[in-house]
Length: 184
Image 1: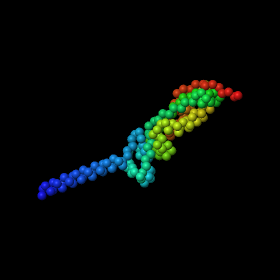
Image 2: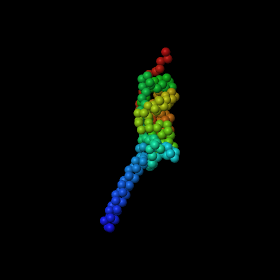
Image 3: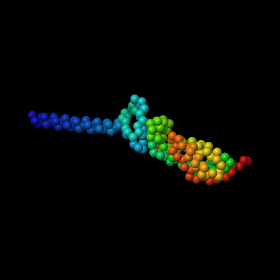
Image 4: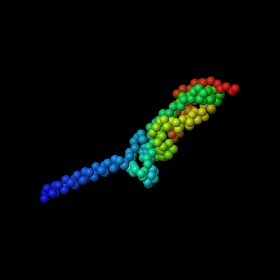
């Protein structure tokens, strides 16, 4: 009788270990964690859930996740020669600038970044291609209001005009006169 009891206890232990292993596997498969570097937005059943520095269960076929890069990304804009910026006094200025872009770690900012940029936040090249036009437009707008003798002022104004929810800082690396525009 004790051998039969011992045998059934061993069988129940083996079954319990298998059940626990299967549960751990499913939890590991279904539970997605965010990190300091990557947050995500889960959409689908039960609506939208923004996950910053925590985790959430993601059921395949029911939920979809959109990762959002939380790191500071550097994007460089160079405008020189025929693409040089034109100042108020009709001079061409070669400009080399860097934009530092990041998503603030707030629920609203991550939601907006996931909705507007999607997975492009994970690839600097795609994000740069998307935002380069906006950066060049901002640089042109500021350059058109300035005269050439104020390179220190140029850097100050670029920083001031570029501040916002997504652009943290813009640094003008170098400016130099490229020549006057001919009117002929």
